[in-house]
Length: 39
Image (tube, rainbow, N blue to C red):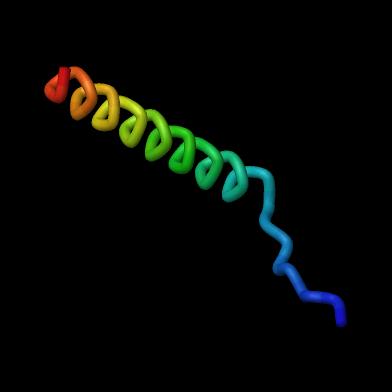
């Protein structure tokens, strides 16, 4: 069974990608802060 994926246009795709990257970076930063607080 194949899953139907709605096609995103280029702009939408870029903005989603940017958003995910920012979220990942934020997560990484907060994780680093947390770790340095533990040490």
